[in-house]
Length: 410
Image (tube, rainbow, N blue to C red; front, side):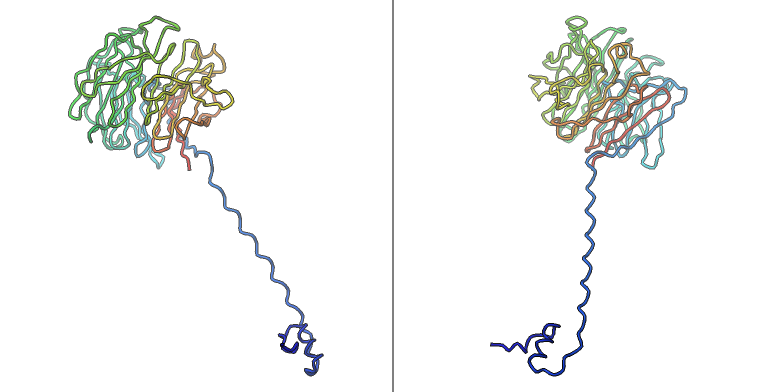
């Protein structure tokens, strides 16, 4: 058993030593002050759950400005955002550079963007299809392989109708070759007409094909790799008002002809279309001025309103909205539309009260977030959306500016 006198020399041990005959009692040494407790490290700042919004604007002054309509596309995401618009009947492709510069390239001196569309596949290929008014009304196409820095000469695709052609286009890959598809309505005036379609086979544009069974007034195309392009169009074959319907068909990649057309929505006006994987999303409105966004699978057996508002499942986008544009890539889906405070204003297309409505899904359409790229400002006119690599772009015009918003998620 150890002696107590072997205890270490703490203050208490010194007292023990004294009692054991260990000599004179040493001076008492005060206990050291306890070290201060370390300051807690600051908690890590969580990454933002919402997107970063970057807004840009191009002042157009007093020019007469147009952008593509919602069955078409007005924006694409290449190495930088690229947009399509016209000023005083001159058609421009515009690069919105990261350094703040805005670079315009004139594509045609006799065209308006409401009769034009932009299709993109990253920086690898951009295609613009447009109606040229002079010296004759023709449908033409131009392409860029460097993100809109330079453009090919125009290719003549065929005669343009006297009425609005409302062209639409898309790009897909088949067997390692980038293909193109285009569709337009052969309207003799402001009324409906045959649906015209054409494809680029990798070497040349094939002769356009006319489907006279269709009574079309605006079509929308969507492409996916190694699959036939799909087209949805507004059709008047059953009559007017609530009889106006949306039809869908695939295009034969070898000829461009429509295959097995089917009615998918009635009533339905002014469609936009996108596809990603097995899902299809179609935006439209009805004759009573209410905006809709619906989804379907590849078979188009059922078309169901998306559940964008968890409180009111399966409801329309807006009971006083029109002109829905939709785009998707991967799990990201975005839709914008003209949002009026009431049906009377929507019927009159009243610019002063028109706001920009927008929703985005990042899980393939299961859940949705509401976005306000223009805040609550009125006077927000025609808009189209684009999606690539999880980013969303929306392009629209006001009375004196072209506006672009980019959403980027962390």
